[in-house]
Image 1 (tube, each protein chain N blue to C red):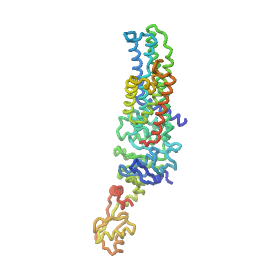
Image 2 (cartoon, helix red, strand yellow):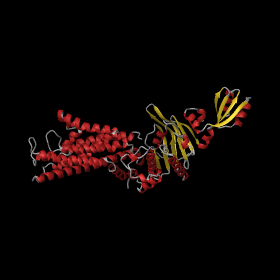
Image 3 (spheres, each protein chain N blue to C red):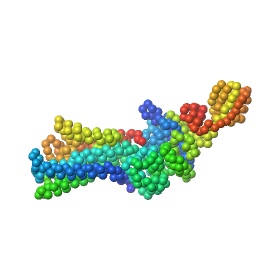
Image 4 (spheres, rainbow over the protein chains, first blue to last red):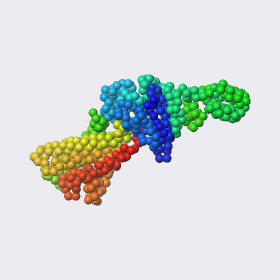
Length: 299
Length: 249
């Protein structure tokens, strides 16, 4: 059963279509990566999900309800949208106590979450003097205050050093292992790839892919075949439901398949295979093709 | 504890965890006490009322401008600051019901404005009484109590007007410059000179009817209070509509 459900969500800002008929589900017990380049509509989608922006049409719910209708929102959902939502004149402790007071969360949680994110020693310092990484940790602490079952983080790895990234990965994985729901947005696939189980890929406000990381990884490998008539071979492969791209008059590249399948398809069309090779383009290349409207990559 | 009370406690916590309130209070205190001492020092000189006269004492008790400007700025910072520093995001994540968040902020600032005005006026009144007593005068003029109450009401109203201006502009620097500029240069200096019969119906002009002794050309206190409250309510109504509907973050 999905915990986060986005259904035919559309958001327009004047003439700009920021989110275009977007639908996806996020399930508990997994870390789900919400991926896409800058400007893809990820943050806009998250803001609508958290009640900070209104949709033009469609819906975005958590546990079946809009955020503003949740009876105890911060105990159910922890969210960190960016690291720039603090008054520079307040200390971390003061900021979290303001939030805890408004949300009805006991103040003892302030010390607990600051300790959890490694900011206990800087709790009394003004946030204006914090580094980006410290503000990122404080943002996460605020999200963890209510010990929520759902965690929604927008670009949480920004500003973290390698040790911080390693720590964050461990935290997110343990959160998911507890059966909770984790949705992490990022434009950096290679960093998030080591953390997530499932991915939702967005580009220009539209859904490009909703699949597992394992499937995405498999799709990133490409089999290249050289023959006498690349266009005919491509037609045969497409008819068989295989994603294929014609590189030039004699070469095709196919994703999500193997040399045996291509060889048999070529034989059925009476085409010789002059060269067959397989290589891994890497998730990043696949991602780049996906978000730049290469349909063979997104299918 | 119910959600509204929790919100109110959080709003008070916000007020007292930045430097704005202590700095405003310190400046207001210095200006209040300082103005009394300066007035006392020049009393009786050519062109000035004698110390101990009702006119001179009323002049010393005019603490309205300090309270009005201080609460206008604090109200702007309380609302506009949430957008400037984007603390509106955690505020709405904790309490997604925007109308409640806005209403509680207004109520807290109004209450704070009343208390702030009461404290500043009380400090000034104590200073005036001390100065007068030191010169053998042991009475205060008849309208002192009414001026005290009027200043408290003006403090509450200008706090609310500040919240409305801050929420509408969402840029604290522009809001403060525009609001203080309007109050001082447009209302007091310009309109107060060239069109006093119009100026008395504007916010600062109305507050003069509340915080000053009876005089020709100013509104009676009850009318002044109603006009000022009307401005606060109208501006808050506009500000609340935009705040509740706007996308944030």
